[in-house]
Length: 331
Ligand SMILES: Cc1ncc(COP(=O)(O)O)c(C=O)c1O
View 1 (cartoon, rainbow, N blue to C red):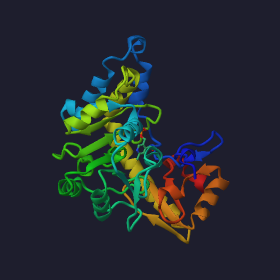
View 2: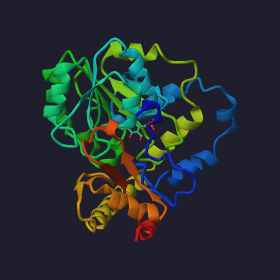
View 3: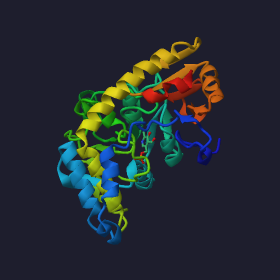
């Protein structure tokens, strides 16, 4: 399969009645973001955004409780992934499977490390680390939503000081106790974390995020790729407005947890499929996945079919829970 043809979840046409192929929080964006957009001062639009990277870095540093100079603003986790590909051209990169589409596209020469299960384990990551210079994976994991605790990962970083671990934490905000799920702020210097507001806050159209690392060397390399105005101030302001809306975040965690329980119940009607449980609002379904996708397709609903390049090892479908008010569309 040509890698360039790999489509992402959420890449659907307008005819879809309901898109369950995306992991973006269906309750987003928070009302605070819409208010911020409506109340934008014209100056923010008129001026070139010289101070936007610093503003976004400060906003993230406060949220993550780390020093501002350890954070670098990027145009979403995606930009950091492609920048990493440029910076590691001469290094051996491993991608534990199953994995996220963009890694497959950005690192066509990488080694795929299979595991015993369709989620990441320390054994799998240890094998990847012992074989390569760089290990790239998501935690929480796309496509299962499972995650390894920060304390467990810290031992892995210590055991492999020569390996650079790049951990895509694009889904960390979905975890209520985000501290336990995030390695941001750990002592290791062989770690880069990617953070993005786009999934949990429902801001897929906002191209903003950050990377965090204690390594001066890696920060300098990423900054070396920076263009004059890497971030729009409009987008940076929207991210700040989303972070400020604490009540919405609390409410979203509750709603998504309830939706995940509902999704498990709904999936249990299909015999012949396996469902990988996890703490997020989407499920990886394996086995007779065509039963589920055909049921959904008849109703104009799209789920995410994973391709061979994702290396699940069998037919696999990722389905996100519908919003509570749209559940009846699945019946
Ligand atoms: C694991 C993972 N990383 C990154 C992204 C994209 O992040 P961003 O919107 O910040 O570019 C996605 C989007 O689906 C994702 O699933």
